[in-house]
Structures are given as structure tokens and as C-alpha cells.
Image (cartoon, rainbow, N blue to C red; front, side, top):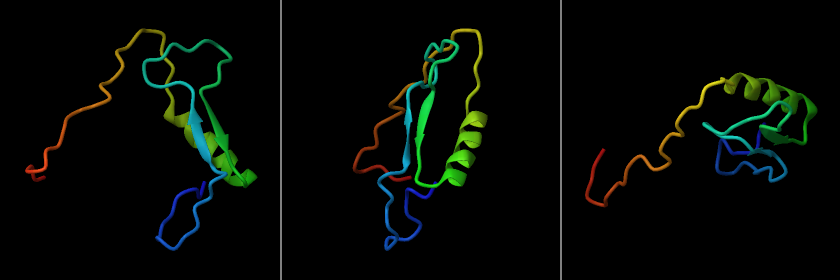
Length: 79
């Protein structure tokens, strides 16, 4: 949607973004909002909606939420 920057000189569009209301493992009822897209460009917003729809998968069985913290990197560790 253009909210971030490609180059450090690019302007950040603070009025653009996504708020997620449901995350992996959350119970979802029919009609509930999964996310809200904020945009200043209708075409980009519609494109973001389509991408977001493809990113979600609704299943009927309970799943475990993934760990939020996968590990801790210490100062002396290298990658």
C-alpha cells in the first residue's frame, strides 16, 4: 500500500496500514472482522484486500497458537 519506505528519503504514509483483529489460533465467528485496511488510494486498498483474503485460511478445528518468542539472541552470538 506504500506505507513503508524503499529508500530512507521516502516519505512514510502514516495514514496507511493494517490493524489485525484476529491472529493464528483465534476463534472466529461468521461475520467477524479479521482486519481493517487503512489506505489513501482506493486501487491499492482493493489490491491489499485481495492479498489479505489469500493470506487467511479458516478451518473448523482448534489449533495451537504458535510461540511468540522463538528464541533470545545474546550479544556474543553470531549468525
